[in-house]
Image (cartoon, rainbow, N blue to C red; front, side, top):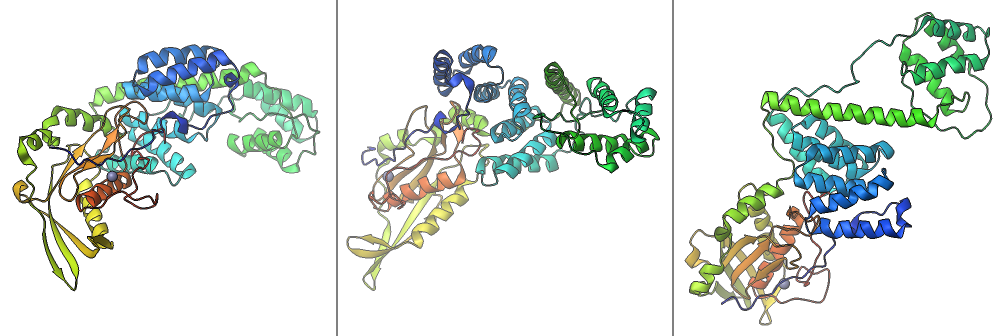
Length: 472
Ligand SMILES: [Zn+2]
């Protein structure tokens, strides 16, 4: 009988954790209703239907970052990695600091097998959020896989070092301008021509219409040197960039040009994704997915009976022997023999050593049983029938709020490895979560009840953290 079950309940934290942006559609009740509808489908793992609704929102608000990010995650969970990457790319076009989108890009490139590009995004994301366990896990993955499977990265379109063809008349104007022979306006017109025709790449600055200040001498000198080809285009561009940022010159770039530039970047990005896919197919590159959760659950469900003791327990396996104990110096010395079930294969996090840490915890904690001080020790053994405690690993279904079960005093300890409550797909917990669950359930198995202090390991509830879920 599986009677004296003591579980830990937790509160589901699902989508509430995404920081709400100040997005325009939030005021529009019909869009925010649609958004809620889509998110409910999303959290149930019905990604296809959720995406259809996200697309309706994006028709009206194409840059809405929250919608784009959820659509990106939904596509990623469906295995549509290119589609996923495109959503995160658009988010980053509008806000290059978005950590979720940066991490999403890393995951997407990792799923495609373009690990160096994945590494770039994970490195950038961890710089912005150094405490994130999720990004750290991904970064470790990508560092490992790069050293394990060397390959040649796919070249990015537009990155080729093409010498721009600058018309002669422009260099002439630059020279005359440097010699004060033409007005600033004429020089600015020439610059506009260069920018609009993408002959030089300048980051666009938004002008606020404040007054001009003096043109520094070095900028004019640079223009002259550039006209005489004494300095590189990049030095010349740096001078122009400086003047634009400091409102010294104002170059009118029509909004359509700005939009075109983003569109062009997006087209280049799509081309890059196609080239990656072609390369990987040609090379038959080995792909190792950055998030192992999906693999673990697949294998787990296939071998379901191996991980669950239910059947054995119902066959009368509850005759667990009592642990050996001695009393000296009026203290208990109790030795628990523990049988540990094999871990699901593909599990990247070593929870057997986590278990050792839980053993250490109880060994070093003052435990009182029957009003006596008790010293608890654990020993892992291989014979099931001699064990006082069996440890087994389980996973939970969507919405199930129990993190572990344990019999009281001896018997079975069930430790949950992950659940579906983060983003509607199975997600593994991080090591610290599994260790907390394990320590708590072992506490029950040595006879400890729940306590009211929320900081105590024997408190009845906790919020699990995930190892790879993008929604933290
Ligand atoms: Zn409990």
